[in-house]
Length: 100
Image (cartoon, rainbow, N blue to C red; front, side):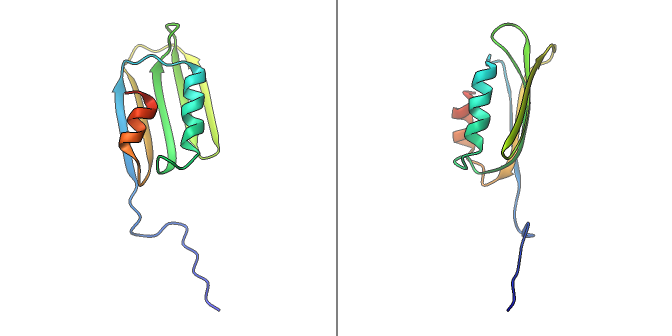
């Protein structure tokens, strides 16, 4: 009986997708996006984070790991940016999901 458990295969490539965006988001919108990332339709997402402008003039900070995400609002004076890290990322789908 030989069982091989691979947490991460050596040839598994993780890619990072990121954009700068001026698009305004809502907390509810980000929550829905991060929930969608859990579904597996956009690749195997390991981590996502970003700072994006909110519709009310504040900024939304989000931090995502599988099955768990944290969203808060604050102030910032930089360009909105977001990043998704994982394998087999569907970059076209991600652009559509985030609307960028």
